[in-house]
Image 1 (cartoon, rainbow, N blue to C red):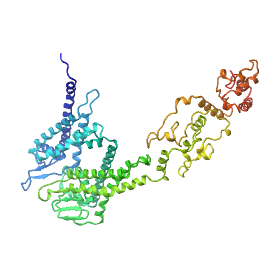
Image 2 (cartoon, helix red, strand yellow):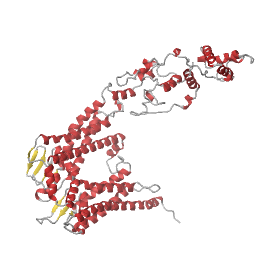
Image 3 (tube, rainbow, N blue to C red):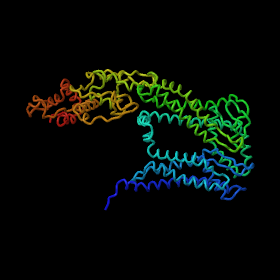
Length: 637
């Protein structure tokens, strides 16, 4: 009997996963096509005068579904007898197929628990192949309908769009990594991508570019809304004139909604300067509308400006690219100089300018791609060029964001790294500097007793003598109240409980508002900038002799003399002079060792404290006095 190789077993286990990925691609395409077919059939059923039967409606749905992927359609039945191309893609219709493809690839690349992980390349190829099988079938089915797909556009851009969505899904399943690059890529590029610094800068540039494109689209949509609001009567006449029944008007409304992203891109291109073409003989720009536009009757086209030179309302459209440039600069500086990191860890001005330039380049590329997808031909002759010109819109977006964004980014960086005196930046700068209390010999808390009192009484010192400001009047209050101040602890002579002779290790002072047990001083900033470290007090020092003495002394002082002193040493280890007394001695003899027992630091004032304790016990009554003399905590066992 022969033993199977591990590689053969692994390949056999991955085969079902690849078949499942292929089926996922088929199902994703079928869901998108089916949803659009249902919508088209509903409109066809509700129409009182349909032009064809259900077969014609389904073929038209297949053609519209292919148009959503970027395929060019051809209308063979025209009044002139010349087939007319249709290349304007409703961008809102493209969202559904792209999302379904992305989700299918993401789910296929993320294996279930207990199953082997499939190859990412295999998942990408399987999902893309399954989806393109349905695309080929839909193109073949739509050949006999009113909207036929151009075979040349099935390879580009339809196949490229599907492959891009599938690749994005696999990349999302892998955690969106920025590398490693394929082995056939240049070695210098592979080394650059492998660096963490490069990935951080590239991520910041991509985010800023995405924000810039979003602001451009939002500004363009605002321009279109304002223009349609100014020509509401023209838009209403076009809407009511295209269809006389409610079913036809619903169809026109759905088409207008699907073209809203296209209108936003046209408005963004208008604000950038190149404008958009209204046929081969007219172009609309902020400077004016030149030529004779060949504008069909449609509600969204009511936003087209009037022929003639532009005025100040048209020139105000330049605020859209200015806002996009400011957004790119702001989001770049947020990563270059965050508010919660020290000045030394911020990006240099060269890095800030370089990342801003990369973001402007990405914004221009994305704008050019969307502009190419939002425009196209609507027929022959004058309508063969309709919409924004992508090779002018993209460079214009890059130029606007670069000319305004780079200087603004540098100015914002200087503003966010301004000198101390401002609230939020001053706190960050103070946090990164070592406090003066830790540098001196008498700085910080000297004993466990004082640290324990700080935790429960809320009297905290200021690090390094930080000045009090008007918005934080509590700063420096510790020094003003006389509890030590920034130079050291208070004088132990003024305390009713003397400090132990041998103090444990120093506990650094905490900053105001820090949590109980939080580290302070230089240790607090060792975990990195912008962090708020929190750590528990160590277990061993809490149970040490000095810590227990400090806690007991604090409780004794708070009790007003009702609690006895802390027995620092057992009776067996007491001094020989204290244990040499005869056993028949009276209470006065046994009170003397109890008064002198304890740490060496308490020997000087033990007798006086014992006298005060005896007076307090006598005032409380015979019962308390007898209890203290017999078996109280201060008696000698």
